Length: 242
View (cartoon, rainbow, N blue to C red):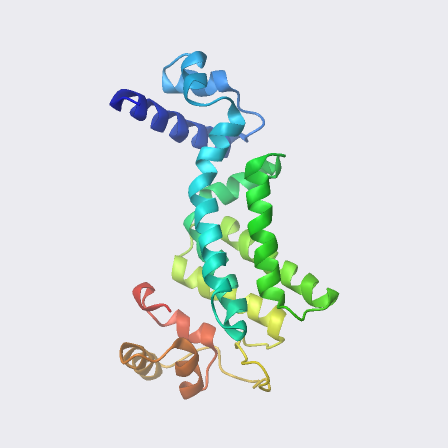
């Protein structure tokens, strides 16, 4: 592929992504994409066999990140795999929220084909990790609900600060899966500790940052300060998040 062909392909993908987001995948034609790029429809078809192939190219980075996140979560210890999957999936949605918004608009990724199969496969793997190997049907349903909870806030509050949005989404998922009113992550076999404050003083926040700088995890800091992990996340800089 020549340098000019590479640039044209990139322009087609950029314009197609914008059109799909603005008007929907199904309502956008190849000719409309070609007109905006300034090429013929035949030129678009030279690079992509059809709209489904354009969508596949747009989805490839997200699918790759999604599969990598689930592979990484599966390598964790069983007691850590659930939250590694939840947080990994949420981070993928935050990174690719434009494509996620497109999908929620007209379910473009749900069209039959290889993109849908990869997408479905990764989400089924996420469900198995979040539910756990010994989960009953109710546990698998709760896992599916938790996974569904990750996407909508990212789309609805796409302009919110990422670190704040991430912490709040995780707190909601913790409440569903662990039953804690404060979003605390409980270790397997531990009893829930209720009534943890949802805020920290400036002194506590400074201590949290010092502890994190010394190598303590967010869970360890939460235990030390008597607050929830979600509360700790709100007071760490984005670069400090576990």
